[in-house]
Length: 437
Image 1 (cartoon, one colour):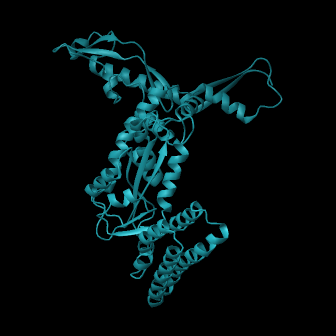
Image 2 (tube, helix red, strand yellow):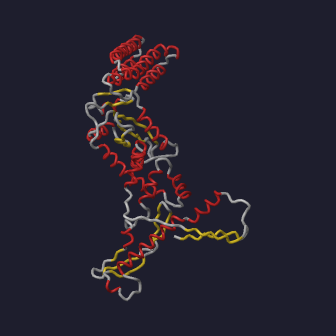
Image 3 (tube, rainbow, N blue to C red):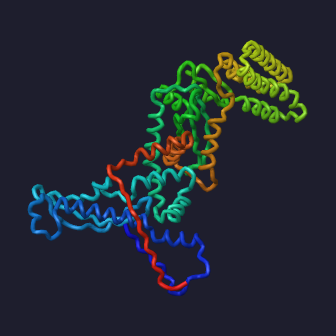
């Protein structure tokens, strides 16, 4: 491959040439796109010659096909830029059928205008950029102009595939812990969209496994869906912030752990709502915080020194301290807080009881909070209004990507067809200056 470069310096070269200026000029030349264009043209020429013989050759009657027509130029947008294909049609001499060999040979659909790899790129970018920002990005860096509708179509196609991939990843595995949480987003209608997410973790492997994400679906429906996936067993622990409808939807999971920071914050909030002063709140919050935090520290300590007898003593002590706090609240007439804490206190120490068998689980909802935080950062803008289905497509891509970025990259790359050929090039660059320094 010989590349001849002409630098026009007819007006004289400047005293200095910043490297960024050279880079910008090279980008304008679009060498990768030109190479792709040349390869596609060469493939079509070879393909047509193989099927129909050389153009204007006298021996073309020996071939089963003959050239029929040339269709209008067709633009194909790729990661290297937009190229123009001038498809040549051929006709079968026996059947009379007309076909366009280059379209099928390149693995394109009849009206496809965007390469599959670029669609993946667009769907990937959509997890962090708005559609208009993505338009600008593709135009600035790849010199590819796409419409918002094209981006949305790419998100829809990739979102459906991502949902299937999430289900596929759940086959044959059971989770040690299951996390569920919800968030809201602005909607195209008056009522906000309700986003609900479920993920799982396994003690022996790092990271989290996405299980499901849905928009405006009830927890009961989600609970049934998760049960059908077969990702839970008798040892699975449901970890949540205490949403009643979530807990009821997963009533088939016997082991439950309430997020301990949520318990502390919720009691503090209820006391504040009752009009309790900051000083009076300390009478309740100090022993509650101390009991829970001391238990957390004891679990960490005794998992190292294996002193399970002492850990068991601490668990019983914490139960006693929580009961005393409930009695104190009841004696002062805070019935609503008493009801909440009585329901929460038994599930607040599950992580410690499992530690007696040297099983380590979270006592917080941090894994799901990080996922929900990522979702909020992407979709919660005052000017972003979402329809349920497009939002769900995007969230499936987000969930699959954010839970396992390396796995997501491999999944996308694995869907690009492998070629049985290679392209190599020896580039000899000749630079001529049209002018003087």
